[in-house]
Image (cartoon, rainbow, N blue to C red; front, side, top):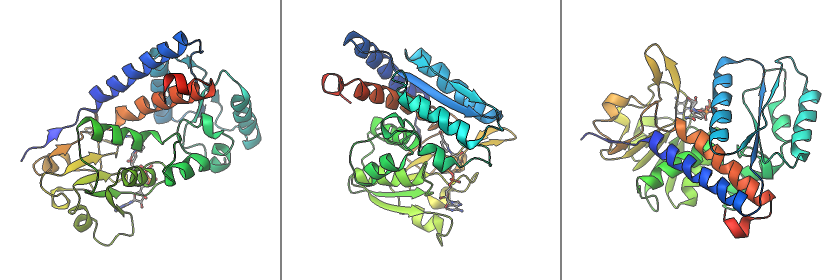
Length: 290
Ligand code: NAD
């Protein structure tokens, strides 16, 4: 078998186009353009690239770029004061604190300053709780992007065996909860799981977010399964994922590439969250939908 390749770039473009149309509808309904405040601390080159792309694509979708950049030695109180200012500013629809922040800062305390309705990364305790309870809220962008890919490719989720490798608050845990919410029979693997390959072989839908290059090979994949690779690693020959693409492509039915799979979806879902947040804050949810 040779897997069909999931085209994350194309789906991400579709989501961004939907967001751009949504922004136009918001303006036509008398609303104001969504404002996205990305907050970057320090000069980490990878974070700078991520933030630059988020800003560029938000502007392309018709949003207002309210970026803030602080020096890497900024203290906790100054950063908290900035987040409080953004929280109170009606022009700011969404706040994205780019993680990781430098080690001397308390990231959890910083995220806690972001009001849930502006938490476009879906990382606050309130939004995590709403997801755990299956109630509406802003969802973490990467798992939401994975779900959108699965839907675009008509992957059945109800009643199927789904395995998520990884249980981080950013990816694995919310991914598992989203799949549970869609009635999958869910198993989570993590660093203490005894035989990851054996558990993964049960999966009709396998989502891998372990952060270990090439962790998952063909021996861990059921023939015909859908395999989503969230991992991103900069290798000598470019970007690679957590899945050994060439060998898994021989076994899987559907597979995401790296790059061009999950990666582009993360920013697209950030824009979708920012639009949803703006519509809710402007009291136009009933008129324009979520
Ligand atoms: P993390 O390090 O916070 O979490 C990794 C998880 O994997 C942990 O829960 C750990 O228990 C589990 N794990 C570690 N070793 C394992 C093993 N041998 N077997 C099974 N499970 C194991 O990482 P994260 O933030 O969740 O990110 C995971 C990967 O996804 C990274 O490569 C990251 O770069 C990538 N990522 C990509 C995007 C994107 O937009 N595509 C977004 C976020 C993260």
